[in-house]
Picture (cartoon, one colour):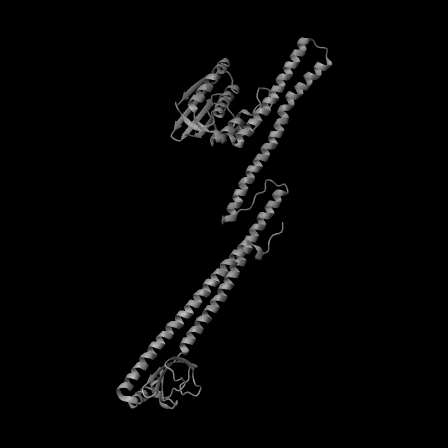
Length: 452
């Protein structure tokens, strides 16, 4: 499988998108800061110049042109380093006072380039407030606007460097994240290819960071564990089917061949046919049990769950199997809590209880005491079947719920090894848990279910 390039990874595309959005936001902030700063400084400058111009106009109004000229000469001396520049001209643009002449004879604000020949060096831009005075006299008060321009340029330069830094860090971060993403995807791809090639024990790598991909890998590993368990179960079932059905089919074949080759009486033929039917019934029962397990595991019966009284079910099963136990000189002791109800399938729960008790009767010696206990506490119901028989070794307890597994490997006793498998399937359908414990002596099987 060909991996995508770094530029083609989702992480890189997301990083590029976030970088673009951040740059747009950064640019918007830069424009806003530039405009706001320039506008504020310009307004402050205009207020200052306008105040000075109004003051000089007041001088003119009170003392005429002579008073205005004296005031301008007083504040515009070279040694005073005033912030303003002044100019008074007549309608013929003849300079009457001050040194500022670079403005038009029009009321209002003007932004002009500084005259290179001026005695005051500085910025090329001047903000000039022009006011019309009586007798066709024009007053101009100017202020150097260079600091506004310099502030704007400084802001632009700072944001350009910030823009470059954001691009560098964003691109670097995107490349780093994409590289890490690709490395993780590569390891997952390599592991997946190994699994596809047949190494079903292989699992996807999980790092210590436990990010989104690690959580996904954990879920996939759990899925692979489940699939592996199912495959092993299928393989085991296939082997067990072949083993379990070979004996009855071989017996059936031998008896039928014997019937064909020998000259038998009618009674003997009847016996052979009866035996054949018995063997076929054994085979059919095995397949019926397998189909029933598949049906239960499919979960289709869950839609028909109703409130059932488990106490009544267990009591009815005990009553049905009590004669069988007595015939084998075994004792059943019951301790059943009344009216233990839960949501479930009555038929399947009856079969579950029947299989548990029948299993205890079938696989224990004579004079065994079997106890059946049912307890319910709020939302929890517990069914326990215990005996004082030989029990099951701890190493084999986890296997008894597997299909066709039988502790007696010679398989001389009746049964097909599916009874407890059906119990496990029914318990799982009802979201219950099964556990086996040492009864000291004997075995104790505990089924835990959620009550209604």
